[in-house]
Image 1 (cartoon, rainbow, N blue to C red):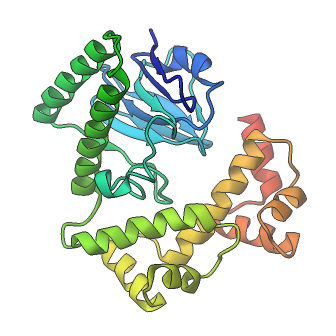
Image 2: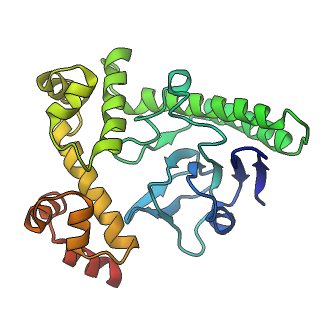
Length: 281
């Protein structure tokens, strides 16, 4: 059952369900949804995110944004989801409060997967019960109460993500630089293709950025920029009827050949072969 809060002003929306696969049909008409998925089942949950198969084990959490597309096969174990739009809670405007951008949302790294320990499961279960209770309480402060609970959920999930996914030797300033870089790439990937572009926005040198990502043990900044471009191309190939030429134009490539070359370099096959393979899968 989908529990919903719909604000009268600004079309704000917050939804909570224990079976996202069933209720996502009702959610699909709401624009700009950000999701926190939690596998509360006893078995693995399988789904596809932007064409990439994903496994979420029991008591693991992941996220998706309106930039991504999640697909589920029939019989997949149910996922608990918390789904909200910018009008309900803007994570960009409140980034100083929750520090989640570039860590669990809008990052260009791999899909974040956070594992809850038995101790954390108890804490999240308590929060889950408070959410249910609050969704059933209809009064003039319900929206604010739900925002407070959502903020708490985001902060707890982000803390765990930083602890599990980011090397301990990085200090808070370095982590902030990495996540801000990730968010900037998500915003400017079509028009800014060089590491120096992002170094300027962050008031860093390109070498400083490259050294930081090397310490982070992740892909280089340039790889992240290129992979973000190819990720968008894959989404367009999978979910639209655009041709490779149209996609190259949309992604501001000077030549279609340059687009083909980058796609093949990152994904080891041409856009055409990728689309045919996915159609026949």
